[in-house]
Each structure stands twice: as C-alpha cells, then as structure tokens.
Length: 267
Length: 248
Ligand SMILES: Nc1ncnc2c1ncn2[C@@H]1O[C@H](COP(=O)(O)OP(=O)(O)OP(=O)(O)O)[C@@H](O)[C@H]1O
Ligand SMILES: [Mg+2]
Image (cartoon, rainbow over all chains, first blue to last red; front, side, top):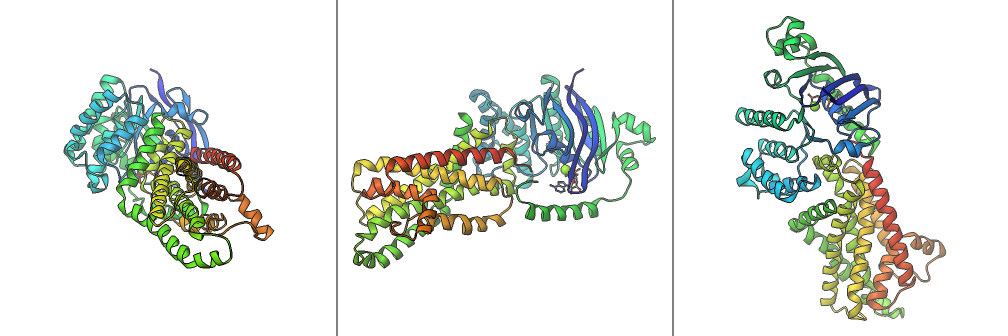
C-alpha cells in the first residue's frame, strides 16, 4: 500500500539541544499508527513539524504526496489535528468553536450542521452548546477539541495525547468512533499516548521514540517478542529504561520559557 | 471569502461580548475631550486659532480608532498564549485571507468605537460642517482602522508574549498618536517635528476627518486617501507574511 506519511532524516534543534534526532519512518494509508515515548522524547515536536507549524532543522516530510516544506498549503488540506495543548477560543461558545472550524475547513453548510450536532451529542456537549468554552471543565474542553478535530474528515488525523484527562467511558467511546472512521473512510490515524494498553489495543503499528531517536518500530506483538516481555508496558520500559524524565524536561522547559522571552517571535 | 467572513465574525462577537472593553475604551476619549476640550479651549481661542472643541473632536475620534484598532491586532498575542492561534495556523486556507478577515473584524470594531465617539461629541455640542459628508467620514474611519489593525497584527505576529505589549503601547501607539496633530495644529511646527508628522500615517487619517467633518485640513483628501490606502496595503502584506512565518 501507498505511504501517506513519509519522514526522512527529520531533525529539529532548539539551540544546541536536539529534540528530534534524525528520524525516518513511513505510515501507510489507512493505518492506525502510535507514536510512543517518555516525556520530552520529541513526540509533539515531530507532530508540529508534520503539521507545518514548526520548521524542521533538516530532513524531509511528505504528507499525502505533498512536501511540507515547499507546499504547506496542500499539506494542510490533508490532515486534521487535536493538539496536546488547548487550542479553543474561550470567548466563543462550544458551538461557535465548531462552526468556526467547519467554515475554515470548507465543510458544506448542511453537512456541517449535521456533523456538529452528531459530534456534539457524541461527546455529550450538545446540551451545553450555547455555553462559553471558558465555563467548561478540562475534560469538557478536551472532548470538544476531539469533536472539532473530527468535524472535517481529513486523510490523516493527528492526535497528540487525545485521551489525556478523559474518563474511561469517553476514551472508549472516542476510540471506537475513530476505528469506525478508519474502517469506513480509510482515515489514517497517527496518535501519541502514555496509556500503553490503549496503544496495544488500537494501534496496528507502533514507533517508540526516546531522546529524539526512534529506538523500535513494529506491531505490539513484534515489540513484545523483541524484548521478551508479556505486555507492551513492560516492553516499553525495557526499551526506554526506568529513569524518570522529569528533571531533564523541566530544565528544558525553563530554557524554553527563557528563550521565548528574549528571542521574540521566532521559535 | 468564507474565511474572511468567519474571521471577521469572531472578532466582532468577541468584542460585543466584552462589555468592559467597550466601556473602558470609551472612557479615555471622553476624558481627553473633557480635560483638553474645556481645559485648553479658552487659550486656543485667545491665540486666534478658532474653536478648539471643533478642532479636537476629529482628533479624539482618531484616537479612539487607533487605540482600539491596534489593540485588536495585538490581541493575536493572546491567541498565541491561549493556544487558539494553532487552530488558525493549521487551517487549509490562504494566510492573506486569515489576516484580512481578522483585520477587517478589528477594524469594524474600531470603526464602531469611532462612530460612538462621534455621537458623543455631537451630543456634547459638536456640529459637522456638512452632514452629507458624515458617511464618507465613516468610510475613512474604516480605512484608518484597517491600517492600524493591520499594523497591530503585524507587530503581534512578531512578538510572542505579553511583555512586548507595554513596549508597543509606549513606543509605538503613544508617539503615533501624539505626533499626528490630533491635539494641536501642525502648521507652524519646527521643521523636524513637522517632518515627523508627515511620516505618521495617523496624521493623514486625522486630516481626512477634519476635512470631512469641519472642512479644515492641510494635506487634501486625495493625498490622504492615497497615503492611507497604500500604507494599509503594505501593512496587510507585511502582516500576512509574518503570520505565515509564525512557529509555535
Ligand atoms: N520551543 C521549544 N524550545 C526549546 N525546547 C523545546 C521547545 N519545544 C520542545 N522543546 C524540547 O524538546 C523536547 C521534546 O519535546 P516534546 O514536546 O516533543 O516532547 P513530547 O515527546 O511530546 O513529551 P510529552 O510526553 O511530555 O508531551 C523537550 O525536551 C522539550 O523541552
Ligand atoms: Mg507532547
């Protein structure tokens, strides 16, 4: 089958810190692909480059046949994304946020209305559609972002820790919806998560990234076989080690805040 | 087209929802009008320069427009801070359309603000020289508002936190306002200062308001239109270019 995402020797440096270190991988059309790794491994940074909002230091990205560096507009037509960090307009209502997205993505009016109602009922926010987003709880915001991400049906959907902070009901609900979309419309799903059982259950293929490098790739079974472990969680720990990454990431976090202050717009 | 509309709608909705912003941004022009209009009026008259209140009113309208417009452009920093910017950055639509829509939205808001100030000065006793020209004056207000909303958006595209905001207010908006001839006549200024005034786009905006509202300008309406129009286009182009270069 055709590769819908092709990544070749992708590198991202922030100053002299290398967040993504020469990674290459392909994702097939219609595949459900999980991108796993400890905190600060470089998952979100990679997704930001794949979705054209961060310029790579080096390497090539092709998405749905278009080059992300030379033709970002064509690339933007091919994907949808649920970011790890919030990206809603707090001063608009839930419905207005959906509407805004639908119009920007050119979903025809009738279909847009239908899908907005269907998706908002699905994430159980239809009753709250007239509420301003700033009045929502964290989980409600997350649900709205997921509903919004599914409003237009892109060729590829990126989900950066979509289930973070969601209750098990909503999580299961969301995954079955995505699997359905994957089956019926052939949408490629690219997601990150820290819940290993989720990745094991949903993903057809998994890449494990650590310190900016891909250290293993394959089906959950292959990863387990490779490490001789019973569960993906154990395989993951075996591959990435048991050291907690907090300290490192908090140092870089601080540098990042600093850089932001002095460097001005260009990050 | 739809992109422009939805970006515009968002700006206008957000504005209409923030009552404090509406009231807050009316306070300042009223204060200026009272303090300067009544405070300096008698001196102005004694100096033989005519009715200061009539002179000042178009300047105060310009003031409320430039502040509201630049502020609305600058709001993009908030979008970045709260994450919403990403939603527009990944959208599969033309960057210029995004910028134009949001700028038009900010400009609409600033124009409403300008019209409200116009109504206030009329209530306070201001009489336009020719009522028929008031609609034309409002169109010029929109143009001035577009110019400064685009400038605000351009600046905001190049900043990524709130700290820059005060800096902008102090080193950009204040000088633009004070050097525009909004508060004092620019004829008879020292040459250097007069030169600077000619480089301030707001000078042409205020001049056009004075021509249309009190029939008392210096550059001529054609000149004003050409300068305002071309500077607006340049700022819009700069803003959408910077916007297309934003990284998060
Ligand atoms: N703008 C930036 N400036 C400097 N360093 C950055 C920037 N963005 C990310 N980093 C650093 O790059 C590394 C990778 O970050 P990234 O957000 O990709 O991690 P992640 O794998 O998504 O982690 P998490 O599981 O915590 O979301 C981290 O060490 C982070 O501090
Ligand atoms: Mg992340």
